Image 1 (cartoon, rainbow, N blue to C red):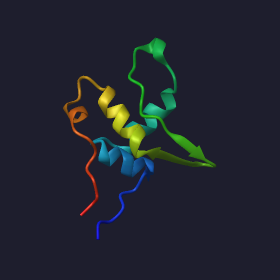
Image 2: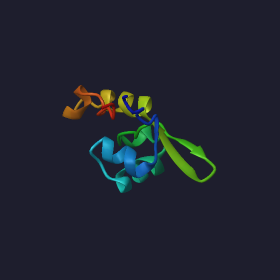
Image 3: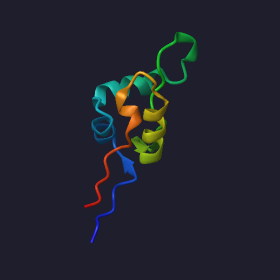
Length: 81
């Protein structure tokens, strides 16, 4: 029986799935919507109280939007077995 893959991740797990670090994701979050700066925007996230979560679909969309990242051509790994 296949296991269900998570649809939401904390910062550490989301960053690991994307080949990054939790501190890099935190910096992307702190930048907010700073399009004027020319800095890349991070993946969409949600707050539930003090907790930050990332949805799998948002991570995949963010990776797909990165043109300089070779990981953008492949979806996140599935945990189905």
